[in-house]
Amino acid sequence: MAEERFKNLFLQDTAERIDYKSPSSGGAKFRFPERNFVEHGRRIQQKLAQTWDHFRDVQAQRTAVSLPVREGVYLEFESTPDFDLKIKSLENRRSKIRLLNVRNVDIDGKQVQRATVFIPQGKENYFLNKVLKYAEEGRNKELISSIEDVKLAILESFWQDETKWMPGDDPVWCEIWLNGDTRETEESFREIAVRLNIELKNETLYFPERIVILGKANNQQLQDLIICSENIAEFRRASETARFFVELENKDQSAWAEDLLSRLHIVDAAVSVCILDGGVNNGHPLISPLMNDEDSQAFNEDWGVSDDTGHGTGMAGIVAFGDLQKALESNQRIEILHSLESLKILPPRGQNDPELYGAITSQSVSKAEIQAPARKRILCMAVTAPEFSRRDGSPSSWSGAIDEITSGYLDEEKRLFFVSAGNLSGQENFKNYPNSNQTYCVEDPGQAWNAITVGAYTEKSNLSDPSLRDCHIVAPKGGLSPFSSTSLLWDDKKWPIKPEILLEGGNLVKDSLGCLECDDLSVLTTYYKPAERHFRIFNATSAATAQAAWMERQVSLCVMCFAV
Image 1 (cartoon, rainbow, N blue to C red):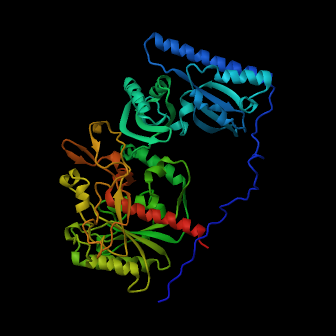
Image 2 (image 1 turned 60 degrees about the vertical axis):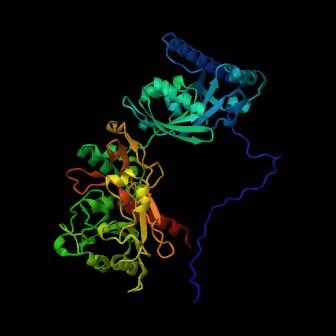
């Protein structure tokens, strides 16, 4: 049989022609403002002297009342508008003068560069000497001429996110980036944090020359850290958890939803994601722009098309936005590349006959295709039958029906179908994580060969709820979600390896009494009764499967951009 060939992908406009220059000829010259060496040198010298005097006053005041204070000073250097600082010359490792961060800020439409530098005690004259040589001999002109201002660094000098995200009087979780990568640096910082009553996470991230620790601090505590520690490099706001949004009053949730709606840009891509579930409430303000009434159908018309349990609308919120929490927190325009369809395959009460699962799925897909035959669609289903699953990877009538749908066996029309792997439940299973996940097999119809079966991992590890202070997370950050099933017990010579992909499915906390779900470690999505509240938490392989359908649309857009 002739080998089927596909079009190649071509990357265009990825290179820029630059004429070669030998090392001796050098590159572009560093731009700096023209200065009068004597006048500018005298001004910068005064600035440096003032900063040192100010710091010595602070040091003396804190020492007089037995408050801790670091040995050394943080300075912030600022460039002339539309010029850069001579960054490399701001650091001298031999003298332990360290460049901590560099930021570009917009001031009146012009770019200004700011750099934060730590100068240890005993090296106070390092920059003063450079300024004197500049004023007297014209030396160090690129460095000193590039400096417009110098002052003591303040909290804003270390804050790398939008200033509106800085903590106020109430403590919030922040990423604290330390300069250094040794255990001694971490231990010294943790001792200071204890004295300042700053709550820290036990986990630590080590990077070359940087350590990152999560700390819960208010504005004053971050300022105190700068005064007390000589190892601060940056502060960033740690991501909020879903708890923030689900605990809002409904009127406030509505305001967040309206803000997101104002930033939506819906691209008519003639592609839909069809959700096979228990119905979707397209009256939710975040769902209605993406889903018309005629695109909501049921296998049995007597069931109605409304969402009876909230699961389908929860799927829809993630299929629409991916990370809904990130979309809400952003101030950027959000592009939606698809519409939504709903196929209700679950009755309002009771269960379907297990022998009919395959037929119900096939006939429901046909309904959607008859309703909009020209539309391309991705199929997404997070419904499984745990009590009737074979557990060994062998096919069932349901998985066989999905293989027929996806392969085009009956009509030569191939389809992309995302199916959930199914979930563990029960305290004993959760307590035995991850061993229980390794022995709990993918549920029917996740064994379908031609479907993409989606399992769950988790990045969720941040606990902000004070009531969970004594709890620990079950799964490590980046680990298998405690909910996710696997196919480790299947015969891999006979059956496929499932799931094929893992996406965010949330985490659990544990204490002496057992394991439980919590808002902090769950995924945010839409609630099916927006008159009561707009948001809810969601998790497990359902959340992961919905994300897979959303992600497919992002990948498809990239492929379309590069395909020739």
